[in-house]
Amino acid sequence: MTQAPLIKLDKVSFGYLNRNVFENVNLELHRGERLALLGGNGAGKSTLLQLIVGLNKRSSGGIYAFGKDRSEERDFIEVRTKAGMVFQDSDDQLFCPSVLEDVAFGPLNLGMTKQEAIDRSLQTLESLGLSELANRITHKLSGGQKRLVALATVLAMKPEVLLLDEPTNGLDDSAELRLIELLESLDQAMILVSHDQKLIERLATRAVILTDGTLVEAVLHKHPHHHEHSHVHIHAKGSEQHHAHDPELEVHNDL
Image: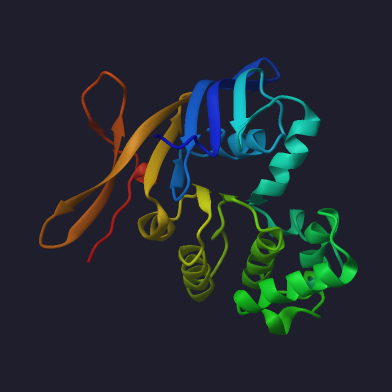
């Protein structure tokens, strides 16, 4: 029996100021998947993530998450406890005086006691190798540290799905590698919005491309040569396979 998707978008459209951002988008995310959501700047990738958790309101279509139809704000309150979103700018996510308070904020909102939330937060920080940051002032952290703490604030709520918006943006090589390794170790299904080729190569199990207002299925296909390439190929329904020439949509893995 086929397992129902964790998240499903059915012919979803969104627009504002007399402009359609995307139209009739269909998307499914299943357990164990790490879905790369690719596309050029301004294509609407971040907007699509925000629609899933109800931060933007669709113009039409259906959103189904965790076995239920989601249409009203009260529906998305539950979705936001099960689908944790890591924003592109960590400063949009971190607003408490200390790291521990930031990480405990979500568990407290889930109804935990203060001590339960602290224990959950300390366990989460330890699992990410961030225990030494617990009492640090959040706004004084480095960009890489803020990114990891932002991930901790989401993981402390034990979500079933991670929505990651440019998670390695602005990180140096060592911080990028550490974050990728952390994400590799997690069991949650993920939607990854990223232009980072290393991230896509290491994590993605499937890919879609948002272009010209539509979502196109893609595959990560490997070519055996004297070195190995991973390229994104666009699959349009009912058409032949086309190679993606846009460098932002092309993934290389030279070994």
